[in-house]
Amino acid sequence: GQDKEAPAAGDTVVLFAGKGRINGVTLEAGGTYCHRFGAFRHDDIIGKPYGTKIQSTTSKGEPGRGFCHVLRPNDPDLWCMGPLDHHTQIVYPMDISQICFHLELCPGKHVLESGTGSGSLSLGFARCIYPTGRLDTFEFNEERMNATKLHFKEVGLDNIIHSHHRDVLSNGFDVPDGSADAVFLDLPAPWRVIEDSYRCLNDEGTFCSFSPCIEQIQRTCDRLREVGFEDIRVVESLLRSYDVIPRDKEPLNLEKRRVNDKSMTNGEPKDVTMKESTDENSSEIAAPEPSDAPVLGKRDAPDSQNEGETEGKDTPVIAEPTAKYSSRMRKYEQIPAPSSGGVAARPTADIKGHTSYLLFARKIPQSKLPKKSENAETSSAPVDQ
Image 1: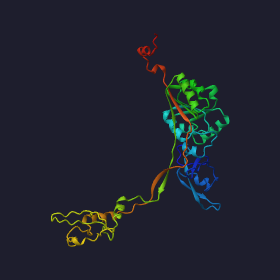
Image 2: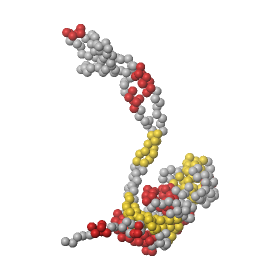
Image 3: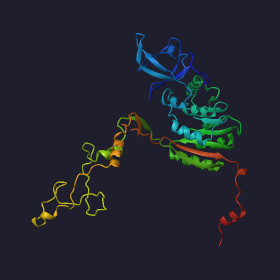
Image 4: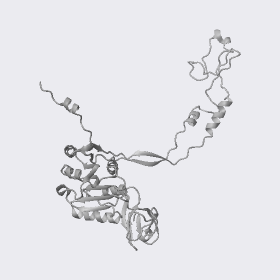
């Protein structure tokens, strides 16, 4: 049920145990669902609010180590990644979002879909047009149509999605003229249904065709222009997924590192020198003058003739740290270590490539199109000489 806060016996729920571990279960009183993380009793799920964390049970009836979350079955993204039976190649959420956006779907819209398949796109349509819209989906394989029809009923969307057994390629859509807001085709030869799609769409209705080969797209585009569709465009969606992971290493503290690089000894700078100027009014601090001495702070022995003249000249000495520098140093040392537990994102190893091309168009009646001026037609006509 869409509006229930908790599942009851007979309802279908989604058991979410992590990425790639999603399963659909129909609840029964006294039933048990066995999973790789343990056994989950249906009685522990029935009556619990959606989103509850359910603990597994061992063969002795004791709580196990595994767990899962109980979710509503009306999210097409979850069904695509887990419990949906892939009778055919399904349309994935990346393409579903593009299709629903460009078809301009919203609650109350009427959509025609040809090629129900496994029903993944039908669920995406139903989510957009719920609760007042209508989806008529057509499937030529009767067995597949009955399977998806039962699935739509299990998730409580049979009042929105109406399944039909019909070969649209041969017989077209069985709906009145101008009754649909959008048409979607997932067929091997969509160009054969373009004219009937134009008939079913209302003024300014939208059209989409889903085809894996560019040759199909080219042929369908040509037919769209012939019938009178406008605003024709092709979209290809490529997805790059990222995993959010915890960051184990602490972030780099550049300020604290800068102070540590001063080679401090007992809190005092080691390589600071002071230039004693002979000028009584000068008291500036500067770096020592370059020297060829092999050891810092020492100089070559002076010549004998200048031996008596070295006293009072520039001599490198160890300076005491200024009050301003000491206060800054203490400030940086008091910075607390950054707390761990951050997160980072990295691209997944497997990147999905091309799925299909999406071809979009719009029905615009000829009466609403701007008319070409006679002057433009005359100027574009060839001139006989």
